[in-house]
Amino acid sequence: VAPAGSQDIAVTFSARNLQGGEYRNSITINNNDPLRNPKKLSVVLTVIGKPIIQVKPDSIVGFTTYVGVPRKDTLHVKNNGSELLVVTAVAASDTAIHKTNKTSFYVLPDGEEAVVVTTTRADTGSFRGQITLTSNDAKKPTTTIVLAGHAIHPPVLTVAPDSIVVTIDEGDTTTRTMTLGNTGLGELLWEIP
Image (tube, rainbow, N blue to C red):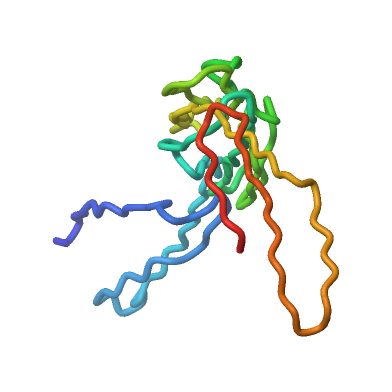
């Protein structure tokens, strides 16, 4: 810098990967001033915290459910921010098919809240819907989770007889027959482990 001159120097501050709070440091300016070398400049950065919503899974697709049988899935709502996350609404696009166990809730910083989504279909076929969460996350005030699957008729297992009672001598073997039936409209798959 020339005598009696000045030079502007840009100082950049970044809050990337920082949570809300106050951060103190200093800038050291090495120079050839015999009385002020080095020169230390105090720096204070105040980061304003915010909530950051993250929902996992971000979609629930490709599943099969049975007609008339509720299927439960869990959404994990996490707050990756440093301020309280306020979810003011949890809304299903079709409440005849999808219901949630919560309509609003809070998540502490670095906390997590589970939201159970129950899907019940009255008829067979493919379906698609969504759950929308409204929150105080300024960058993402609404978060939408797609729900898509296929409903089929369930099987209805019958077993005859109701129980089997056998008495045999030590070392002997015997065989009894049981009959598995299906009075439902869907295919019955079975195994005996």
